[in-house]
Image (cartoon, rainbow over all chains, first blue to last red; front, side, top):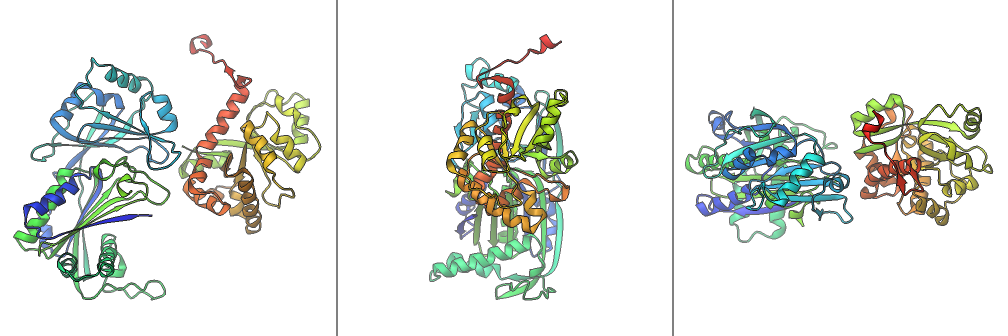
Amino acid sequence: MTKKFISLFKNLEEENTKNLIEKLLNSFHFVKSVKVLSHNEHFRTHKDKDVDCKVFFYKVKTNLLNFLSKEFLQQLKLFNVSCISLNDSIDVGNVFCILPNGTLILNLNKDTYETLGLEGKSSTLIRRSDRFVVKINLLDASFTETKKFYQRVKWCFENSLVTSFNFFLTKYNKSNGNLEELDNFGDANIEKVYLNDNYLCNENVITPHIEQILEQLTRSSDLKQSESTELINDLLEWLGMAAVSSDRIMSYDRVDSFISAYKVAQPNRIHNLYSMEATGLISVSTIINIFRNLCDELLLKKAINFGVLYLWGFRDSPVSFNQKEHGFNLTDGENDLVLVLSDAGDAVLVQVLGDLDEYSR
Amino acid sequence: MFYDLCSKKNLIEKAQKLGYEKNVINEEITQTELQKRMSQKQQQSEKFDRVTIIVENDTKPLNFLSNLNANLVAVRPCGEKSFFSACSSSDIDIIQFDFSERLGYNLKHTTVNLAIQKGIYFEICYSLAIEDENIRKNMIGNSASLIRATRGKNIIVSSGASNPIYLRGPYDVINLCSIFGLNSYLAKSCLLKNCRKVLLHADTRINSLKGIISLKRKAEEIE
């Protein structure tokens, strides 16, 4: 069962409000896909501000031992590095990640944990779990070559867990958030990949008055709980359909009511919707840049009335928001976020999480 | 990794595409045919990956199994006596049932617990439920009574399919098990850790003395 966490913001022009939103976005490290949606073609001419061709990440094929090399640890100290493995699924296999604070997280199945030789804890998400989490702080002052713990970890990665895995990795500057080139480390196989942004225009889409909805939600004092829930659910439903360019919200749609009885909430209008989407490993700094640019378009230039930022996390990520443990069940593994902004300075941020997630408990 | 412990050679490719990393090839043989082969010393030279022995005579004992040359041994009993004999045997890894018809006898907790204590697992082959809708009804009823008797313990689920069209992905099988009465956690175990335990049990049965000591040759000695 998925859970939603809804945060409402007003006065987006104030730095405090932006900082609050950025703090939430900063805690979302492993974003697989980002999409920006708006109604104005003005968007397109500035496309390289949002998800531009200069944004890149790395595909790395390496064993875990290379993450203990001097060259990598040096880069980890000076820059923020996010890294997530791609090979396996988190419910049956082994998943690894490195957080920007230098923590290496190994989310392992029982076999691998028992043969690895490092101490960890049982997963908190399921009772009688067969999954174990090992956390190693690579930036700890005591994690040096002369120390016993380092030697132990090195031995385990040399002898127990020697397989090579595929990773996505980003490296960015701690102060200005600029993406940095990754230096070679160990014998890792590194490939630079530029984000390929897919631009899409959907014509004549029935769009609700998002600015009015946000104003009602954030500023109306006499709005009942049930009414605000209904407004948010209707908005989320429309946003979901807009994300997949569903026919149900197109003005030409004449579907049989037996198949679908969905109607876009009134009042509504007909717009063209423009979106740009990119998939890979999107760094936190890129997401913050996109958010800042969207705010500029809305509040400073008044070029658009509303903007939507979708973020989809990796389903097999070991952590979700605020570095809380994340898992995958049969039907849910969501760790997604949608942020809706209006030119009046109102915003709604919705975090969607599956049941197997420490953040949602 | 997901296991399918009752597969065929022509199904392995499709099974691997669906997500089953480990597939065991099964050969079905009747009790009389097997005893005939063993008496002719034919069986000494051939080794089965997995053999399922179809018991035809409820009264005949299963003591010939200790000489069987197979990695995995499964038995399909035909009646209550052969079922009891299989549960008390130390030479069996899996007990399979013919779920296409009603069992004809009750699965008692005491008999089932005998098998559980010996580390024997009970197998449900899901492809029967997909092949025929008449068999499906019997299968659901029989599987539910097996799960009730075992309390969800020591159960594995495998395909037992004859044709690739009857294979289903692991998560679909987990969903299917909810009809049989298993929750998603138990159903996942039936495809994951329980199957692994069966293989370990078989390995211990073959390669160890009294389940305690096993010797492995060093690589240098073989060279």
